[in-house]
Image 1 (cartoon, rainbow, N blue to C red):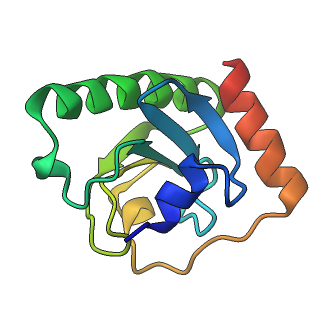
Image 2 (cartoon, rainbow, N blue to C red):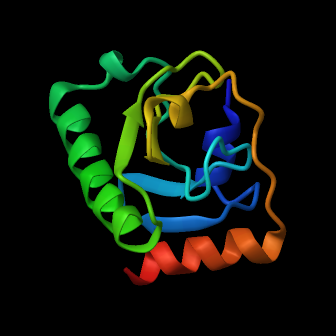
Length: 129
């Protein structure tokens, strides 16, 4: 069964993409808990991150590292938090979240809302970093 992330990878659903290569895609979370909240997914549809081959897992984390560095350059924050939950969408993914304290990374917090223009601006800033 195709996940929403697989549909984004296939171009069937639009996304605010910030980086892409032949194996991975990074895009803004449309239900962010912080401004600049990015999801990084393998293009290969795998439900559980630890079901990835070890080499794919390490490459996913290396790709995530590069995106985190870019986010930190353009979003004012103390750190980029990293989370792998994997419960809400059956497709392995990494959350990269700009944070100033631990409370900023609480997934129970109300989601932030941004206009399409704001989302596009943030995506472009990260792309250009």
